[in-house]
Length: 226
View 1 (spheres, rainbow, N blue to C red):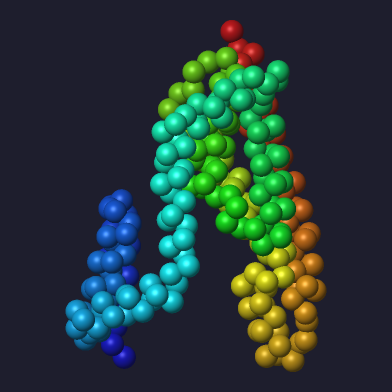
View 2: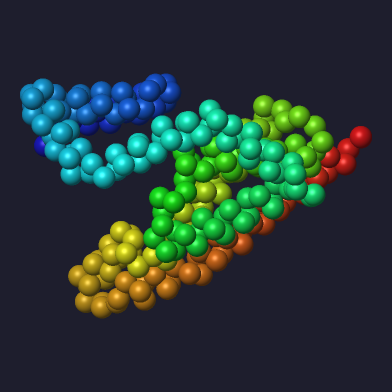
């Protein structure tokens, strides 16, 4: 067995550990694996081209980035912050818990691309959460607090998506479970498998909401300090 193509994995790990540009790191790892496996440059490019063609629908997400960048340049973040400041009692939890619920419900319906880190978290959710925390504490956010707020925004989006899409009957993981069970002689419809994901989805929502509520209370205590 030829283990030389595994060198590409080492290149990938080293590049990510050194925080190099991810896309270039992945391409470099692919080139190393291909060359170590005895492929020519032309064969490597043909393989990359075929993979891109088969998954070209993923590139549709790239088309949204210029629109998002334009909206940010026109003041989308500032408007999101202004909206939060206009509320009577804005709080960290009141911003993120409703977003978690909406994100999870949409994911349960299969609408996973309707929100996400580039579409909603970075330009809308994070500025709103930062403005809410600033209003709670009555102080400008430190770099550490700002990083924590943004991390919670990203984590909330991930949790809503991950545990919501498991309830969608056409989700790949649900279909994979169905096919695996069918090979073992267990016949279950995708809907029945998805139903078993509901308790986990509800538990994830309750746990994350509780965490957000505790963090919101912590920000309230910071604001109460003289």
